Image 1 (cartoon, rainbow, N blue to C red):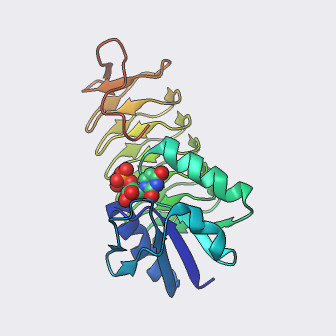
Image 2: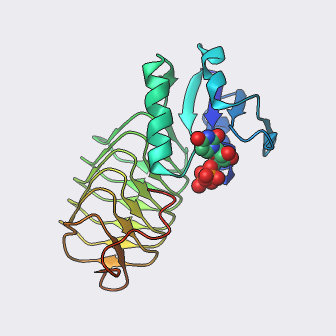
Length: 213
Ligand code: UDP
């Protein structure tokens, strides 16, 4: 398991490369469709995403923040029979009886507590926490410093912003954006943008700044 191909050579990719190095990958390269991007940190960009098939024996991970693009590319890799991994920083704390899907990354300082299930292609970002018995859907992003209390369900693609808090026993539907620092104390039943304390739907529920959805 020495060769890792990371798709998407941005800041998020740099963090993933650092985790990969710490868990033992010695041969790390990037693929990126922007020809102007030649490197990511100390690693080389060796081609566009279409070149994935030239690395059949490598492990793969997608490092693109936008959930829809991350899903699309990860699905293409799976269809092509390539091997997607999940990566967990050695300084993350993962309880026993936690399930983590392929393509998910768990950053430094994150805590995931018992009987929680994290789907595929998720980002559990730096110093965030997901407590006991949670169900986190595919391609969800729990941003830096966000906290999810016990027995919370968050459906696919939803983005929980930096420093947000989700109170216990809450259910959040798919395709939501929870603003930075928001505190969610009621179920969210409509795909929407929610901001503030307590969190409330923004405007008519339109998604704004939705590059990550
Ligand atoms: N990227 C890509 N193919 C795509 C979409 C994005 O190679 O279909 C690359 C993009 O060129 C960029 C990186 O992925 O270098 C990260 O994407 P972006 O800047 O959109 O957002 P971030 O992941 O930093 O949020």
